[in-house]
Amino acid sequence: MAVPSLVRVRAAETSDAARIATYLDAHSQTSPFHLSRWGRAVAYGCGQRSHCLLAERPDGLAGLLSLTEIRSPIFGNALVSSGFAVGGGVLASDAGAVAPLAEAAVALARETGCATVELRGGPHPGAGWQADTETYVGFARDLQPDEAAELKAVPRKQRAEIRKALGSDLTVTTGRDAAHLRAHYAVYAESVRNLGTPVFPRHLFVSVLEAFGDDADILVVWKDGAPVAAVFSLYWRGTVYPFWGGGTAAARGLRANDRMYFALMGHARARGCTRFDFGRSKAGTGAAAFKKNWGFEPAPLTYYKRSTDGAEPRSINPDDPKYRVQVALWQKLPLFVANRVGPFIARGLG
Image (cartoon, rainbow, N blue to C red; front, side, top):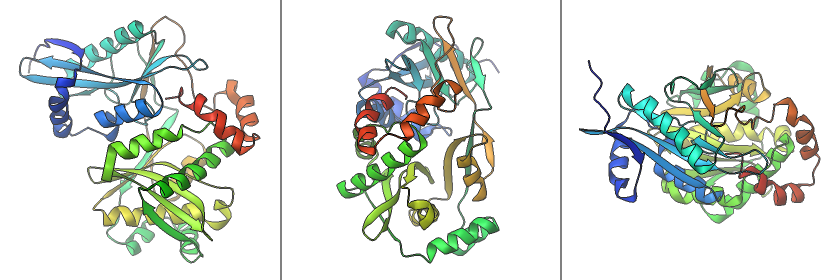
């Protein structure tokens, strides 16, 4: 079957909003990270710019590519699909739209002074792109119909930890108000500092929560009135995405993370979700092992990179040996210093 000829690839305009929404709603592979509201929210929340490229054919849209223009004096400038996300890449309804959209992204990168283009998922964009299938793995599985079945679906050793967590003196709440935002940011900031990475700007979480409305919320685990674990989740097409989660130094001993994720499974089930997407982790890390212990099998994620000037594309992987010293030093920073300096660095990671 012949592929319909493309009329053009062009930048989306404000007047295209309804067409884009209709296309995204109809496409089976649309993720939260392809949505216009994601692009706008993360760009606004981190002081960056969002773009959307459209591939058109005579009978309508053939594909689109959502991009975030990330500028950083430390890591360099990049066009990322999608910025601050684990997924994205070209979304197309025919194969003929893929390479033109990818090439248009490279042209836009040159125009905007971005040395790297990164596509997090999607079909292979064509010749000249570096494909990485080894760094990240994703974890997702169906939710069980009730709590008892959910416990049974978890391997025995982790199931025992969950039972202990359920019997501990912890309180769980969910919400979208300022108190939950404050609790989440306090916990998340400490968690990423302990891992040796800078925290995102507070306004990023505010912007995404506002953009997604009832399709996002925050679950917090409390001990004696203090937050010890928290997760910011998105809900899309029956799947819950626990996206930004973490725990304080006390969380491990309290098994607060176990309580948090099991509570989120029940909360998502009550919202009508049937699938739990545990997100990505770097292959071979403790985070990946933790998710596998919950009965999730790792699936390789494919990301694509291309430079616009012939140099090596940027690297923002904290496990890169060249960042080893910086990571170790960051872990030792007082939390108030990390929280003040971190957002200026993290806004350029994308």
